[in-house]
Structures are given as structure tokens and as C-alpha cells.
Length: 307
Length: 263
Image 1: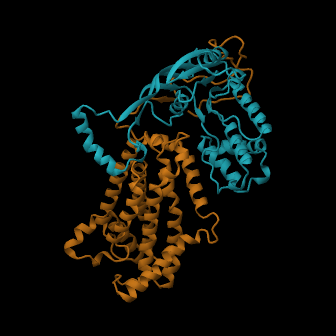
Image 2: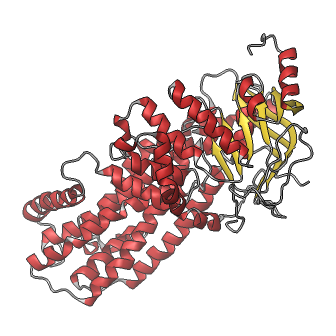
Image 3: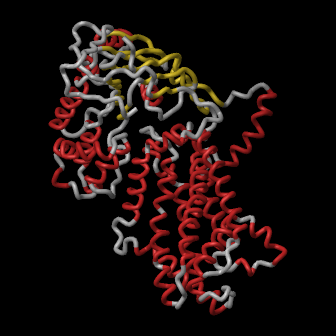
């Protein structure tokens, strides 16, 4: 596609004055040689259309620009800017440390309670925020969808990936906190990177799926925050997995976030990692992404009409 | 001569609600569940399609465009002109038929698509350029040209929400005018800004159009059609009624419509 060069300045090249046009029309000069095969073919899509990941790659610059826009816009006209990304989990950490640590005396597996809640909350704030902004992204970008073509998958992807910046900021802040609480830093902290990647993929799956459903069923806007609230309480965000009674452990483990948040804490605090739970989370995420992408693809063609 | 655009039996069907106020737009889950139950029952009773009416926005439209040709598309409101551009721009999918495009397509169905009010002029040029399909390299290469044409150099670092509407439109048009695809699809975005800038826009469009590009142009201005286009097609109720040299089609349009010649 990019090999077909088009030069407007060359006048000396082969003239392809269209014969079908009346003689009065000026002769047109162009170096554009028609490709043998159409660059674009438009026809009704089949019910099970392929995902066309390659076209997604062709539009990577737009993805980059939309992520950049979302990040730029997020903290425009704020005094504190990106500090807000830190203030939220930090405040929640203090509140939780007070309520659950000091008042309710919930166990935190020997980890300083502040650190325990901070780790949980920074992951959770990212996940819920990214999933939610992904889910609302198509509706928020109606003007783009009804006026220009590009793979629509870019919109929820950009919205979710823009949240990663916040996750990076809050994660980096863990290091001074570790030092403050006098915990040792080990190579296992490197595991935080793939685990953060995993939760990003899960948030991406949620964002993609719900953004598509949201175009048709605006119920999503009300249902999703509620669903996320429930999800937070069944996930080990403010309590350790070990607090869940043994007979309910299997049900608890069906939640892909159990393995992810557990794994994140374990690698942070040097506890044994449940590789089985993590493997399940990976499998779940892959399945969720596939389901989300295909659902999106199937609904995609009607976006411009229903929005 | 091979065409650069080939449109073959293109149809677009919309289903519109006739009775109820609620259109398919704001379907809620509940309505959808209810209708999922009702639909088979209705069908059994033999009145399945009573509440929905089909509308053929495009009805078996076929035509070809040669490379370098400037084709005007005219017709009354609701003729299917915009739907045609939307299908060609891949914004909506056709119901049947197909289109073959032998080149990259740039669509200008609106100017300033993707402009964000909180971003600065500079940032919006990049964002808008990317949305319209330019690469970052292309935008950087043409940045000065775009800015010079718009005449808003002094406000490049100002958020566009502080722009006057004229400045906004000028910047948006400038980005669009510097697009460089082989096929350009334009929907009446020509007339923007004050009369001075309108003239500039018109000249620029003429320049773009005469540079050898293939252009599809929808407009209600018969002046524009005759000035800029060699050929034209006339659409009415989703059907291609007439095609041929621009002036001929425009005259035919006048002859079948009550509108007196405003030229």
C-alpha cells in the first residue's frame, strides 16, 4: 500500500487523461499507476469476520496519538496534574490502614498493612479505571466513528492503555514505600512487570467487550460501575486470599483477579507465588480477550449506525 | 482505461421504526429481551415487519470513476448522497453490492474531526492529521504549510477552545486541505470561515482537485459542480438517476425539480 507513490508536482510523466471525460477537460498529469488489485474492497462482511489484526498494526500511529491525547487531556487544567494518580491510592491506603488495620484488625499476612493496601489499591484503581474508561470510549468518540474510518478496536484500546501511565506512576512509588517500611528489594520485583501486563490485558478485554455492548445497550453505563464494585469485594484487594475459608477457596479462585493481585503482592513481599492461580488467570485473560475481540468485531459494523 | 473507483450494485438498507418513538438507537437490554420474545410470536402471527419499515438509502447504485476525474454528486436531501460517501469511506457497511478502490482514500465528511477543545492548536494539527490518515512524518513535513495557510500562527500554543469559531474552522480546514491520498471524498466542507477565507478555501480546493487527484464531491452548490467537476451523477431516493458531463446533469436536475435556476 505504501509502495504506491503519488507525486503531484511531476508534470512530465505519463498523462492519463480519461477518455470518458469530455474534451473540454484539461489533460491531467499523474504518476499514480493503478495497482492491479484493489487497495480497498468494500462489501458486506460475513458474520464471522476475521479480526484483521494486520490492519490494526497499520494504524498504530493513530493508536499512539489517541493514547497521547487521552493522557494529555486527563490532567489538563488541573493544578496537581499526574499527582492525582498517586493521591488516590495513597489516601485509600491510609483510610484502609485505619479502618481495617487499626479498627477491624484484619490480617495482612505479616506485611505492614499500609503497604498491603497500597499494593492492592494501586492495582485495583488502575483496573477499574481502565475498564470503565474503555467501556465508555466508543460513546465518547462518536464524532470520530461517524466521520472517519479506522479499525474501531483502536478506540477502547487507547482508552485502556492510557491508564497504564497511572499504573506505572503508582508502581514506582512502591519503592520508596518499601524502603520506608524497611523491606528488602529483590530480583523477584521484576515479576511485577509481566503481572502488570496481565492485568492490563484483562482490563483491555473488559474495555473492548463493554465498549461494544455499550453502543447498543446503554445499561452498561449503570451496570458496569456496580459490577466493578462487587468485583472489588470478591477480589483480594483489601484482604489476603488466606482469609477466605477453605471450603470457599475454589469459588474465590475462579476470579482471575485473585491470581493476579495475589501474585503481585507475593512477588512484592517475597511470599510464595501460586503459579497455578497465575496460570489460570493467564488462560482466563486470553479467553476473555478472544471473546471480547470477536464480539467487538461482530458489532463493529453497526457502530456508526447506532451511535 | 481502468477505473480507480468501481461501484457495483451497491445497496444500503436501513430499518426504521414507524410506530414507536423509540428507535433502535436507544435499545435497552430490557426492550431487546422483550422483542427477542416477541419477534418469533409476531412472525407466527404474520405481522413480523409491521412496526419496522425498510428504507433503501442506496438502491442498486453502480458507477465508475476514472483516475484524475472529479465527480460531483448532486440530488435533493435524503437522496442517499451522504450514505454513498459513508459507504465509500468505510464508515457504514453496504447491505449488498461491492466497491473496489484502487488507491488510498481520504474522507472529509466534516472538518475538524477529532479536534479536542482542551488541546492546543499544534497538538490538534497532529491529532487531526493522524485521524485523517496522515503519518506523523507527513504531518511534520507539512506542518509549517498547514499553519501558514490557516493564519493562526500566533495561537498555536493556545487551547483551541479559546479560538474564535473562524480560527477553529480555518485551522481544521488547513489540515484537511493538506491531505494527500489518491482518492479524496468531500462532503460540502468547502464553505467555511469569512468570505476572504472562503475564497482562499475555494482556490485551495480547486488547486487540490486540479492536481490530478480523483475526487468525489457532494455539494448543493451547482456553481461548484460546474466549476470544479467534469462529470456528475444525480441521485434521488437512493437511485442513481442520471450520470454524465456535469453541466448536462445539473441542467437535467433543474428540469426535473421545481427549483428555479439560482445561477
